[in-house]
Image (cartoon, rainbow, N blue to C red; front, side, top):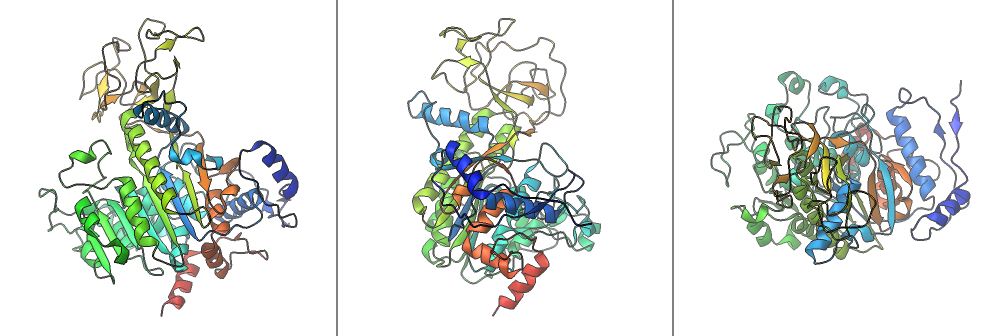
Length: 573
């Protein structure tokens, strides 16, 4: 029996309706554009990698049927940057500038195109960074905990992942001869950056010692090796982040922390192997990065910490000296822009997520502000005529923006305004038992007021990392004399957990440049790949070479990585 199909609504009618209510730039109509048919399935058991790819292609094409032409692509990923995070960071940034804050805009909030992104994975309502970033990079939703493989793989089972490897946007760019870069404030082998270049059914296999012997024998290779051994096109040109010890053998000690040996037990010195590339450089601190002649650098590896990089508020105190996210972004673009064919760059503000997990809004918001500075750098260094910039998050968090604080009330402070919808007051708003409360709170996490094995009952402070709690015998703490604006204060949480969790709500997408008009409405997260694939000329052409395109040149058929590797091998001189 032939499959049942659903046809996308008339393109001209759809766009007319959307343009009437969406505050985006006018879109050129391609009135003769063919629709992309998608099989009607039963969810979730009817979902397949092929279905996800085609459905994402159809959605992106319906949003912008007339192709744009982007030479360069930059994807900014604020890990865990929920909509309340953006709103609170906007206000904090504005208040630091001397304003009331609410009217302030973060750099990417000035972009003309916006959308909501649905972040669920094929097996979880509330997702993780591994499956979500894989969806953004490949055009297909997949399971939680897996990197660069589709939903047919079983987490932690190497054999099951064979043949399920997806093709990422960065790999396509490299195969097309574009320069490529990955920048993050986490370990460079962490989930989000790894999803741009690597393929494993387990997000935690960052170094050889974390890959079980059975899975290693089945052919699974850790992320650090996959980064250095990346063999498509000219390889990865820029990789900046943390995680030095994942690349160092166990008999080698870290240059910054003498007590930290390398983690690798396979004897491989991956930093030395990187330096064998033509024109390769390696740096581990900001001074070395600043001393590099980036205009003549071809392959630059920067590993600035043994683990994740420092939070932005801690960075100035780092004895080794670390670059900021915006400084790394500037350096990466300086290297990549030398390629006349163009480039693909992914920049992650990874520690937004970590601040939230710690129940510490200060760090999460501070990281978001620096993330916005990095976007501002990229926006200034590029042109909207040829560079598509997408800014989004992989998932949200449980941060809540609550109460009725008066205009200009410190966003990290206690609510002064009203306890209801009444007249504003300069006094603390109080709960039903007479206690003040903060504007920002978490639904769960380490800020629960009960005693833990690390801190007594009452207000909690970073770092906490509890493994167990007692019931809060005295109820909510009295915050009247607690400095809730202090950088180490942990916001109260209702449910005690060792770490705050992700949220399942939609996240925002902001875009500018060629193809950005496709970013509007409510989008499935995997459709963001298709916005890139349909509007970045080199990436689309590469997909067409893999047989993924229909008669109109739109990539609608899932490519295989085997096809990509074969094509890349034939292209080598």
